[in-house]
Amino acid sequence: MNRTSFSAVCPSPPYKIRWFWVNGAPLAEEQVKKIRTVPLLEHLPEFYTVRFTSLAQPMVRGAVAYIGSVEGEVFALDTLTGQTRWRSAASGQILHSVTVGKEAVYAASLRGVDAFGPDGRKLWTFQDPRLASFYCCPALAEGESMVLAGSLSGFFYGLDSRTGKAAWEFKAGAAIYHTPAVHGQSVIFGAEDMHVYCLDARSGKLLWKSERLPGISFGHYWPVIAAQAGKVLLRTSPFVKCAGCEAVSKAPFDYEKAQDALREHFEKNPNHRDFFVLNLSDGKEALRVATGHFGSQGDIAPVPIVRDDGSVLAWHYSKEGSFQPHSKWGAYDEPADFGLLDFQSGRFKPLGPAGTTRPPSITRNDDYHHNTLGGKWLFGVQDRLSFGCVPLDGQGPRYNWEMHEKVRDSQKQGLVGFLGRCEAGAVCATITRDAVFINPHNGLYILALESAPAGKGTR
Image 1 (cartoon, rainbow, N blue to C red):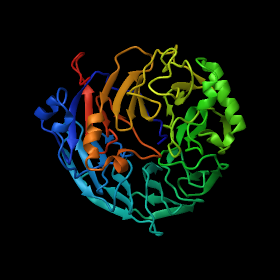
Image 2: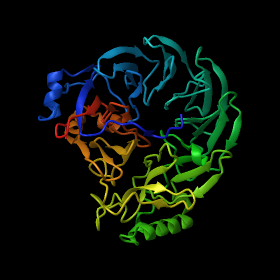
Image 3: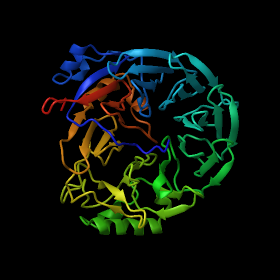
């Protein structure tokens, strides 16, 4: 569980809708066919009995996709038909993704951690003895014999996957919202004391603890393991809004000078940093990376992506990057770009000449993308507004599906503020060999897409 957000295989766009799941069941086939040509609002229910947070990503194993709801249920969906194979009550509200093992599905809720068998039968529930909630996606280690999760009590637990009993516990310095990552026999997570902890997954023994990192929260994201480089990558919410934008604006339309300006800004203002590269071996900061923070205070920029070859891609401030239209900053006034991290220099390299690649959804500057990468296809969900994908090499079609009208419908029920976006983290598409599964961040439905003949996609 290196949390790399990368899949080597991916169905290519254009896409057609395989199924559209809402309120516990897929829409009828004739309704799905009409979604291409008429407003979606006509097909959605007036009230929603099944809702998700923007952190709930459909998790797929075999022919089944699993997801947990705000109402406190876990659903198992057939990946081909969208039919609900089973639904089971959890111990409380589920506000993050579930974890799928070979023998069970594990869900962390506001009242405990639950395990469900292949048929949906609840196997066990673990409750924090301090009566605190869990707000993360659990991890598995030691051949899936250990379930790992941290709670808002500040304790991190190693649970026996067969019984649900705590094999060990570790006390961090503050509440834990961070989803853990696992590399070998080590489990890594951040606590809200802004330290990163690495524990032995078998015993809970502390292997290392990082220095305090700048920022106000790790939020609900996760560490990303760049195993080939021997590094741990993390992002935090910084103390200031849009850190570094002014520095970049002093170097108009020059990719290298913009990075020079950013590096100078962060040398003078180290507490403005939000991107960190630590050694896997000892937790010490390996190099300083100047990315810039393009968002409101409290937001956390999307976590980086690690490809199979070990290369790392991430969003950062720039000018004249491959995602930057020539002599323009994009839709709004913050020049964000997606580039390749150089571990030797801590600088970013453009993926191509300026303007050769378009962002995977409507805008990328005032609202974040939340990304996964399937082969060469970069997928992005912009907060509640659009979903799409683009080829990183600029060769191929751009797929985009706007969701503004769906947001307006959900606003009628007052759902968007709570369910549409988690300020400190969100997830994007789940990619398999033949389908793409998304919870489009308004928390009201699940969408499965598959490749369509050229010219016959949804748009």
